[in-house]
Image 1 (tube, rainbow, N blue to C red):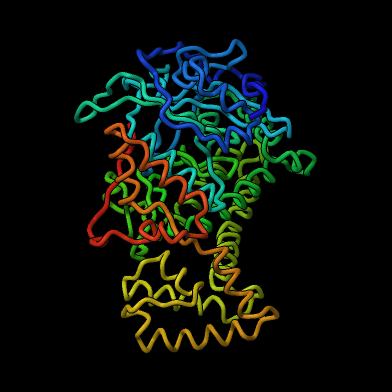
Image 2: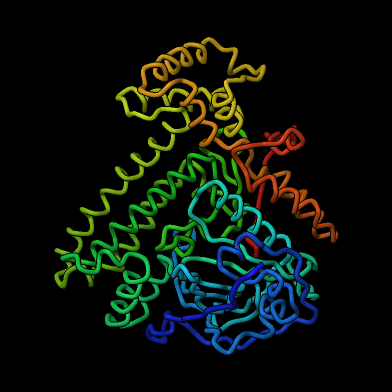
Length: 484
């Protein structure tokens, strides 16, 4: 295909140098390209054949970078499971900001590229399994229409990394609208001067929310924009049954994109208490807790902005609290808007929230598959299962169908909307593990086939039905792990 080469314009380097550190390249022995996202490469206006050359592979491995590359690790802090700590890119290298012909600016980052000044004793490396997991889940999220970082490539390094055992080393090339996090602001507020924090805020506004530049109080407006973006993001997660797993403040972007796919997964059986992270023993980041945790994280962001919002501390707190109180309303509006679409409801009625909650309660009671239940409603084809045969569901269905019939659009149009909203397929946990295990044996056919199916989640070919099926013993505990 036609396309241009990298077009780097590294605006982040205009910030005070306290926000980043230059990285010395950590070269690997024998990098090999094992997966390339050709659709994303096309969107970035990159030449696909060029990205398969030894020079490109050397870049994806962090062995050789273009002269115009930024070569930095970003500084940030964060609350991890509620505890504040100094962090930073301990195993990531920001190559730079690529600008497309459509003036889209994206970060190009290597994850697992070796030690940085923020490694805190770690080796800075990553294993193949977690990098493939991030590739699969992030691309699935993109296909589902959820704001997310994306994955351009994975290379193996020809070296081993040691966790509990020796694992294949790998590096992921991640693409993001930026890597500015709540934790970046926490670092600026705790460890830099006020003028440095202001520079970060001004830069963030220009990069992500330039329309608030001329507002009476742009920093208060920045807070409100981030609250809106995160409320919409978390509502989207909830609507598809996605569980991030580690919603630390350093894993919450200012742009409103999903980032850092470590211990993440999609629910099979609907249960608000579902936890997939092996380290979240208390369930802090359970599915049902994600909205409240987002609110907590945003309060930490607001604290960072207080000296910029108003020079008087009490006035700053008062103004920030007014804005923070809007999060719950924004979230509920976005959530119920999404859930109405899942049920084919295009016009809001007072009864809708009760209708939605009643269905969710029945789904929890009967322990049904979250994704497949909504898809069955959309397809108007119910499996032979206790939920659908129950008197409670039949009463609910009668109310729902009467509600559908009362709309300005036909029932057929409503069902079509539902089919465009409710995925037929998600990255089922056992299918993700199957693809990763095959790749670790050197067989990448399984992962390519899974990615093909996940790229069109709202339709499913006859031969792909198996990808929509939960694991037979899907009630057994399923755990994912941080990719460190």
